[in-house]
View 1: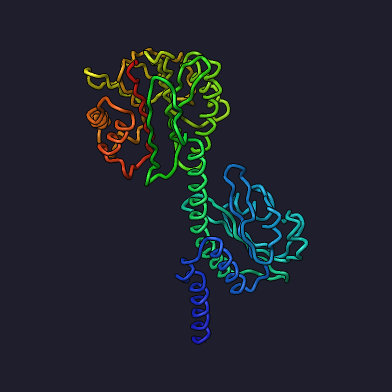
View 2: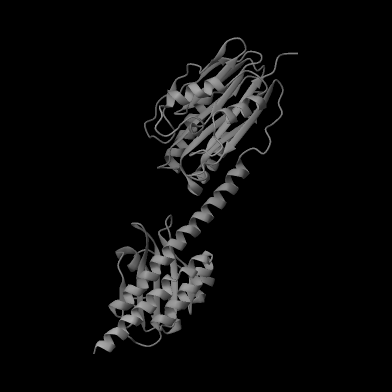
Length: 404
């Protein structure tokens, strides 16, 4: 009897070691999924094994990896949370066993066509968040045991960690590509001003929704935008791209930055509900003598005037976009004398953890001296020590050239 118990304990240990093997950590995500499914199919002596990851936006499970059910992946099978076998596991967030499969319990035709008789599935979690479902199936009727459930949950936990790495890598790569495609590769050359810009992604938070933009308008005015969508990652970058395009469109119809931001706010509240953004939108007059500025919850720019030092123009700061309490937005005209430099930025440039923001303002003010825009930009970046910012940094400097 003791030998039987020892044998059972040894077998359980072998099964656990097979799915927690440190060698698995050296595989890339897709290979890890493939190896885990192969091992669990052998250990549980089942015919099929599949991982379905959760599409959070659509609230659907998407077939991502499979052994014995490769058709699911090739056909891009999806099932809504709450429907069918996998959908019920995702909804209840509990393991589920079906000893004898019936059409009423399983809606995936691939499972029927395969002839699966018994199923066991478990949820996949990242912390408290559901990220997918892992299930196995047998072509003969069988009864899965509590030990089978525990082993499959171990595999699901391992796969969950890998899925988060996979998702994070995809998100970061896509967000970086999107952001780079939307940020101007070269600022336009326009009469009367010279410009320079910098963008740095946050090292801790990853790519986010910061952006800058410069464009000429048919009226001869020059549009200047610096904005910051709340959040980080691919979602924030996608929202940023939509706001950037919309503001460009509104700028062709609005002579006042406040009017353009009012329209953009309506777009955010209707089509981007739940998102927040701060935006500085400024228009420099055709003669370059004045700047019309409107702030939607954004930090005020700095203005360096020759022989007059550096200060932040006194500007009203209206509500950020997406707050949901519409109020009249305001624009303010500011003189832009020869040789002056306008410095626009996002909060990642000046904010530091455990430090009052006024300290960051003072540090920025001390770093600015009137001069060529590129020199001002480079000096700010080196002086403020933002080689590895905690948050994204966007910086745009515009200097008015002296009249000929």
